[in-house]
Every structure is written in C-alpha cells, then in structure tokens.
Amino acid sequence: MIQLSKKQLAARMGLSRDQFNNAIKLFDQQLWCWGEDVKRPNGNLLVACGFERIPPPKGQEQFGSMYSRRIRRGGRIVLRGWGLLISDRKHGAILLKRYGFTPELLSGEEIPTQLWDTSDLPKLISPQSDVDVSRVLFLLSAACRWVVSYETWLRLRIGMKHRETSIEHWKKMKKTNFSCDEVDRLWRLLAKRLEEAAIRLEKSVLARAA
Image (cartoon, rainbow, N blue to C red):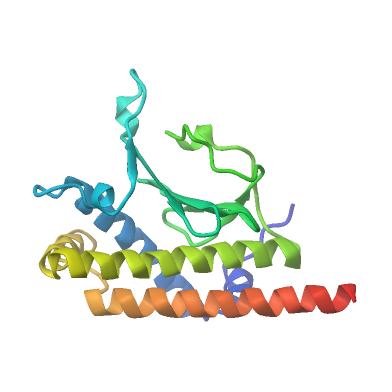
C-alpha cells in the first residue's frame, strides 16, 4: 500500500507543513510531560486524573506500566512511552506513535488490554480512503481535545509550577520547547483543524454516495 508523504498527510489533516512539524514536536514534549506527571513526588497525576495503572507482567518490567482510561462515546485512551492510543464505538481505534504525527488504524475495533511493547499491537492500517482518513481525523481530534482537558484539569488541581518545571527540563534536553500557553493554544488549534478536515471528508463521502 502506498504511503502518503508528510506533505500529502498534512494537507489531508488541514495543516500547513509548519503546523504538521510543530505537531510532531508538541506530541513528543507532551509524552515527556506525562512521564513527569507519573514520577511526581507528591503523587501520580495520571492516576489522580482517573487512569488505571496496569503494571507489566513478571519478567517484562522493562516495559513499564500501561495507563488506561475510559472516555466519552464508549471509548478508551491508553498512554505508553512510545505513543498514544484512542478509540470510540463509531470510528474504531488508532495509534499515534511518538516522533511522528502519522496515526494508523488498528485492525480491531478495540485497544488490546495487554499492551507492553509495539510487538503486542494488532495489525496497523495506514489510512488511504477518504472514509478511513475521516475516521482517523475524528479520533485524532478527540485525542487533541482530551489533551486540552487534561492540561486544564492539571492546572486547576496543582497550579502551573509543576508543568512549567517539566517543560524547562525538556528544554534543557531538546533545546526547544513550547510554553504552557503555547501548549494549550496548539492543541486547541490541532483539534479544530483536524475536526474540520474530518467533517469535510465525511460530507464528501456522503455526497458521492447519494
């Protein structure tokens, strides 16, 4: 199956090339921040937010814990160090891997309950048809909206200092970063653009089928 180029994928997402590249960096930073939330001395913030911490089975401790939470529309979100998975009843499930912003559909409708390494994933499908791309964009938009809600919850619960410190540590390693205000603005922008692109595609599919 032919893979879409970054330029083609960005266009189908309704993003400019710069916005697409920023999304890759933003997601990488966000995964780092979630790791800092887990290690917080005063308590694991993912657990406080409602995630179930699922420790790895004996002999696979190197993979670390899996964090899973139920979300709207009968869906689920799973966080791993190497990516994010999100599902709902209507659109299925996707994986968004770290170091990229190229979501793939899972061949099954549900996210596996035991997911320690990428080798535990079911078959992944690169979306090509307008129907599949629309499904992916709706799920990716939902993931972005969820990140916004999580970061808002975090600020209301413990204030800004923890996140600002996490981002400062990230900046020392990567030499670049997005501030707390930029994080909120960029995730909101991504959610809006992705949902708009998904709706356009869905309308196009329905019009052709009429």
